[in-house]
Length: 330
Image 1 (cartoon, one colour):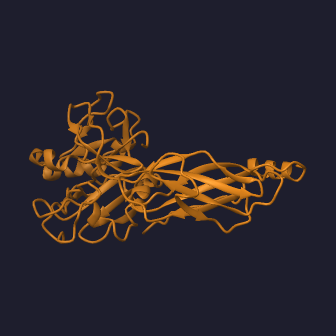
Image 2 (cartoon, rainbow, N blue to C red; image 1 turned 90 degrees about the vertical axis):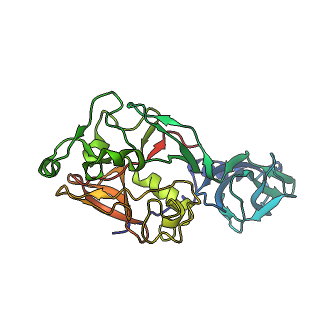
């Protein structure tokens, strides 16, 4: 079952309403006062900007919108969007942007007294740029990549201990895997030779354990954080080839269209099902999120040769890979 994420933008804020009431009592005409409130939902070539007119200066606003540039303090002579809206809160999309370039945005409004600008906001459409390294409690080192406003590990997690040093149960027996009521991990086919390339497979209880499985400064990505990355890369229908490792060193099937333009370098580590059997190495990838879906299930993103899908209600005793994300967005 695919899950859709809806983005809702409030039409007016209490702060703007307050200033609108003040405007009705203003007698002296001045330039407007503005704020550039947020940059939201960034993709590889667009960014949605939000602005607010705090005070119209005592005269009607003739034009408002956003201006942007690759230099500080963008002005009307730079890139400009005029927003056709009567609302004090306004939103529009800057298009035609390029990845790995820093952009600066300011809202603007014009009345009979002149032009006013809001505070400057900046953002960069990061893609496939190296991020900081990470080290888990076992001493395994991981590289990372910047994608949008996030930093993702490039390798699957392979720790055998929680962050506090407590061991995670290594479950090899199929019956024990099926009955496990605590956090557990395994290697595909119980073969440690698969660890360095594909990492470990974990049940969901290992993901959710309060001892924390991710290295310091990192965490198992939530459903929402996966969705943010998917949206940035163009949506769930086109993401698979953008995050998969290219070539056939590991992907043996249906990989001719992979570009790995994101740099995530996703590998076909396969998974372990609830009976303890192993499936889909070299042709499928399955990643836990830290988002729970009921007492017996968690959410997971999976790919077995087609597009990425949301595996809603994935059983907690399934064994999937983990990708970690840095605690703070960039």
